[in-house]
Image (cartoon, rainbow over all chains, first blue to last red; front, side, top):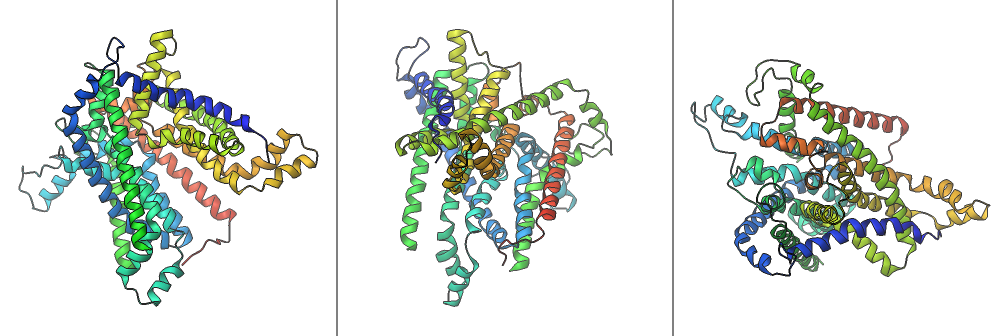
Length: 274
Length: 267
């Protein structure tokens, strides 16, 4: 085989310089004050952000569950479609990702606004009287919608890629042995899709929890998520890198804990299925 | 069951494309409004080509994406080869390095890089936030995608292939180029494409690592969103969307032509 250990040297150097050392600097900023002295005051000031963290995890978790529920049947039907049709449907799922994320989210404002298309439509069909409107934008619901919209492909694609490997004969065998639709789903399709579910959950939950643009555009100014808090600590007036670094550190740890819990649930689930 | 799944998929696709459709339709609107249709017009398309802010952002976006793709593809491919050659302990460390930017929330990667550049700038006066820091950041988050695409191809590779080429008198480098590279090319291309896509669409990391001097499209759009979004940006994304659509259709048509027998498993 090729003897080429040195081929990884530029990579090792680059990743050390631009991912490992920067995380070290985050750590350093989190535990020092403006003068560079060691302090724990940044960490203790995190207490006032408890609600922000709670809201972020809550909304992120809801969006993840909705994505999972929506994506599961979609990914399954794609995986059962014929070759060429399958490819086309995967493309349809991926294509929106090529349009700028901010603009796609911004376009939702046109739909959700008080004078937006949804309210206009409701007035036309007579559900609402003239001048009336349902408030859709600037709600937590709008934030969750924005998350589901932006991150749904991240759930569909990993699910699809494991489901496509499930052989039809496995499903038929279960049916022949007398399983009904729910048993086929619960005992065959679900356990076999678990790896895809797990990576889908990670791929949706992490960006959803840490988002800050969706909240700004669809949630109005009153809802603050942890991503918004971090952004204000680094950009603009009132920036405080030390508090910002601490917030990022806590966010990282929280996400790791959530992922560990998901991993444990996964293992238990496997145990049940066996 | 079949109709049910068709209706369901249709609803999801409608959900995915509704805002895009709105955006495309209103790029032809004859007024600045986002919700009131005032008639068809191409005025925003004309305005686009006179908007220096958007055009320079487009240039930054494209040039960064191209350079970052090339550099990250080279480093990432070499890394994938190297990672396979080292012992398992070192391999685990290198793979952990590779996974860091993928597992970390983008905002954490972004502020970590920002703090690094701030730190270097404060202590040495080098690396003022701008085009170059943006480029370094993009290369950093692109590399893992290339590594993850090339590694499986190397695993599938017949180890004797390279040895055979050397036995037949190739120098190691020639053997690599002629025997190994063609085999792992699909992985390299997929990795490069993913890197290009990620770089093109990146917003979060760019926001924190670009200075005032060099902003890509996403960061420019973000600044606009705070004031108001001008319709020119809708026209630009419509054009870019159209370009991608045409490219994908062409690739598909070419694939269909070159593979007359579709041997994929079908139900």
